[in-house]
Image 1 (spheres, helix red, strand yellow):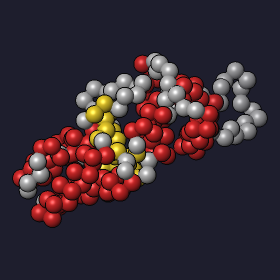
Image 2: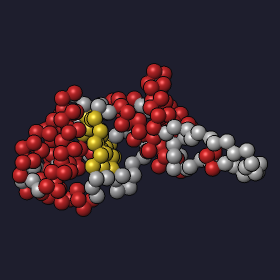
Image 3: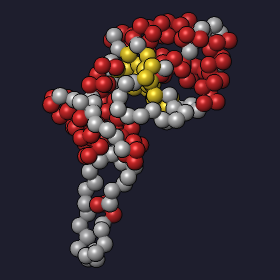
Image 4: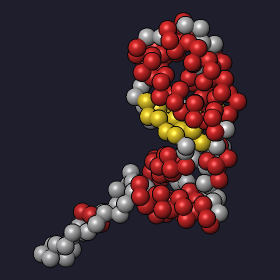
Length: 198
């Protein structure tokens, strides 16, 4: 699976070490994305057993994860997965457009081949949209594409994809169209594109 976001890379990096105004905005977005569970009254629960709703799911972001992210601090390895999940939610909040594309490495390879067969040059291949390092405190994940493309490259990719799209296979079109939507928004608004795989 691949997620693409039309967003300024400067706005992405500003989340790490956010000023007071941005921190308040992102805190609200995080609370909306990960609402605290509402405890249900259980009058006869044994005193020594902790109710399920109060148990912490290690895969879910915590208030401490948010505080650490907003401060731009070091993320411990055991909190990396939850922090990536939090980052994705905040990234979607900040982005002018977000597309989620269902594809794996094999599907991407087939789409890239089909696009090249119809004249797309390698400089504008889909992988290039996530080639530049994000430059954030979250460590990259093995075998994942976590990067961005600058606005000028996004514009070129949009134009190149538009040119070859009419001739590609239906399976390739299903992948390219949501990618193109994000590139269109980024091109029109002077934004970059961030690409994350999962």
